[in-house]
Length: 79
Image (cartoon, rainbow, N blue to C red; front, top):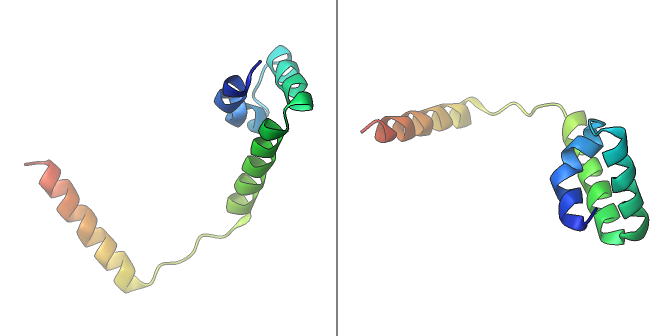
């Protein structure tokens, strides 16, 4: 396994969705590759931070502007 393969499988690895053989290959690579270990660790932390946060409620004026902008954007695509 190389660094490109690790990047392609990072989501499956973090989610625990890799087959055993693939997981073992990836972990062998991580034993020798500090850069990939760092990417895995940072990705895990990022997922953890965003999954643990409560959604932020947007102020009503921001919601209204966003909805209007989306309406304009979708109507322009229909032309």
